[in-house]
Length: 193
Image (cartoon, rainbow, N blue to C red; front, side):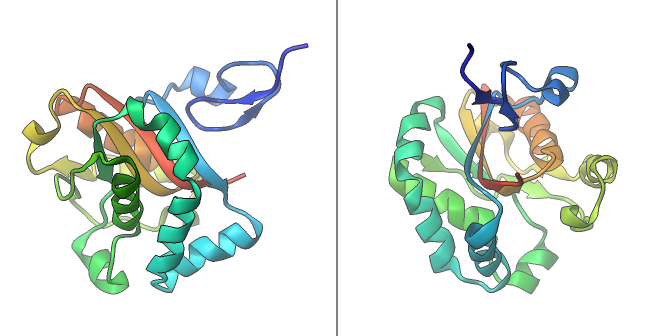
């Protein structure tokens, strides 16, 4: 009997297949996906507190809990790039939660944090309010690079706070790879169950 595992791209629990049906049909551009927690129960509350109540200490503590996992995957990347937010969102929230996560990962692994290279060029609706198809349309063409040379030939760890359908990560990965990133691995603090 084969051992159950999860899809290396989206983390979906699998009984036999090595890649889930959705990722087989629509393979993501990132090389692999790593996820810290499932977005449910007390973890859901903790992440909401971090993201919407400016509890940066909670976000940092959650990342520190993942230290063993981060040290296991650190050989897969040279540079850490947080998913950006628009200037408007940054002003509203006061911080970029993916930057906090990326900063902590950099502290744990000693890998370079490359910030403000990838940016979000226009406002979008909140992804959690949209269907799968709407999410893809919502993020299409919203990412750009200020200086692609900073990532040329690098193996990038793209950092997100919450992975649901992967539409945001896929779109950002395309931009990073077009700029010459050698590979992109995704890390999300949590994923929806």
